[in-house]
Length: 322
Ligand code: UDP
Image (cartoon, rainbow, N blue to C red; front, side):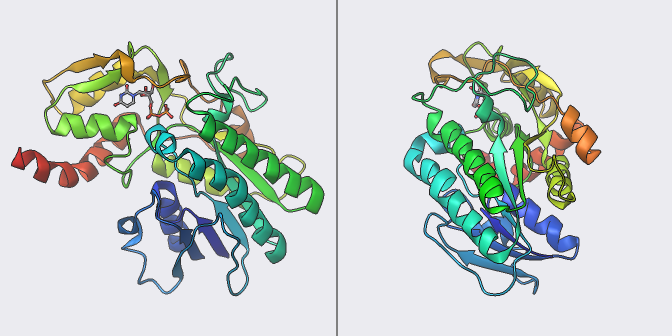
């Protein structure tokens, strides 16, 4: 297949590109490099089946030749990034997703969009099933991302219903791994960078909020199973993909400190916790298990060891200079 990936040089986009190339597909990666990084695809650019186009998908676009599928992954995704770029985030979820859907319609291509557990907001049911409509504050600090992604789901379903485009929606829960940006502000790179520098880990709030962390290769497998699924009565409805292994942020901090032998402990930053930061988050993956025969199989410890190894080369030179 010839597959176009928006956000192709981002954390997830680059992993999807690599996996698809290794599976024998052709990949066209499109990215405006706002939060994506060319370093992520440096090892792919010389492969003949890979093409990179620098473009902001908020502006309409076309590509030469046939496209069999589109994976729509362009968006800031870290709370620090989307609070810094609220209008870009809203635009890429709305105009950007619509432009990508237009291309899918014109090319008669299958379309999968990256949604998020943030569509559930600060959830009032636990764990979160796809049938839950969510508890989003439409004017809160996170609303630029949450509502952009909710809009992107709505416009995707509308292209399916109105134009008959073969669409898929994956709701991605917290994911980590190699090629996250060290400074993207999310808890995994923050904690690993702090631990490798021998600093205390900054836990925002009391640390009793929970998250459930999925290693990137498990996530990629789940996404591609959804993408490759034959169209059916069910295939267009959202599917949660994530790891149900839930823990508090305090427990997670202790785990990172243990894996890195960091003696510096934790400091609690009560003021740093963003408004409407979800108190609990855990995917119910019953639907993914049934529809995709998928579940994660990389343990948190193994995934973290690989990610720590990746960050070591990026953090150590700085630490040595301190
Ligand atoms: N967090 C933290 N310390 C940090 C960064 C994040 O305690 O240095 C907390 C944050 O408040 C949230 C959780 O970790 O409760 C996960 O945050 P992240 O930014 O990774 O993504 P989110 O799951 O909120 O989208």
